[in-house]
Length: 446
Ligand code: GLC
Image 1 (tube, rainbow, N blue to C red):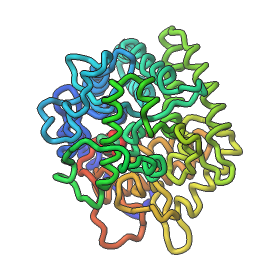
Image 2 (image 1 turned 180 degrees about the horizontal axis):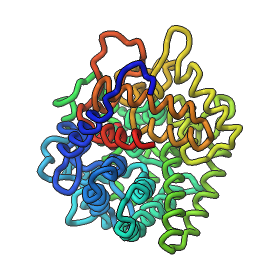
Image 3 (image 1 turned 90 degrees about the vertical axis):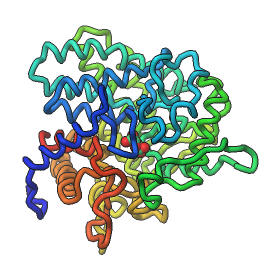
């Protein structure tokens, strides 16, 4: 691999496994040693893919534990709490007041919002890698109805106009927490008219404030949780009250890709897959008719409250490649954007692929979370998307950039996108970040 530095893949592989094993908390693996003491939803899917390479018991345990927090209406929460870590993270168990919902489980404590539906393709990857296919098949059978209930919840409760596109009702549901994409709808929350309940952040105890969301962002995040509490977690009530309901191209892409995985897995185990087919037919059409923006060759987001497109400048707009949503002609245009000044840079500025937000925007920030830095899970999805359309060279470039960043800096949460940056810290956010380690193991094998 020519990435201008010698990568000791064997040593890094051992290190990646160690990161994962060190972050185990009983039945699940936390995202990182300090900042995140609980189980996070989409992290669990990526983490299971990593374990599928060397510890199938733990891979299965991740998904089992996550789904132990599933709500009776199918909602899969973005956090399944570890009560022992409750004093380290805000908003914790009590703040969510999920007891207000008839659907929330009684024995397991969870948050009241969801996360991208990565589980079906994680399960599919586990099956592909399994040596014991009989066992893997049993696990597919065990998980299948649970994952189906989650997808059904999303299409039933989050698609009020039955368009085939689901909405997120909190930026954290997207997984791209403080992406500038959300600034536009969030700015509409008027704190002269509504009040934020009192709260104290805990993330700044263990992280650099320069790398984390601002206090204003947090006021907005917490205000939204208060809206959900006041709506008693009833989706129809929340939809009437919430100022934030956005169709996110990334969230929908992941769901469409997961539906595909459910079709393939379902055929294998003799399940009826017609729901998944219907959802995808409608969803792909809607992505292309409602969210595709031919003027910049990216998929926009859509604000259901103001009924407006949110112009896309984040890498989420490229991601529909991952689920085969664009035509080949659209894909050619998307790849031009990826390789052009919007993401790869131009002139004197060159960026590791792929910055989470475009360097051409004044909102670009190389250090701040989802406002510029490179994230390994996004690169993993982009890699697969590029391969899908025959862009092998570009896919390898993404893979090489990911491996270079991980080997140069370690298993950080997110990375400096500028290639020639000087004086930067090695990596940003948490060190020993589980999905960076897990997806390194998978990237090496694809
Ligand atoms: C951050 C990320 C989110 C992730 C969580 C746990 O909040 O933005 O995507 O799931 O950390 O790792």
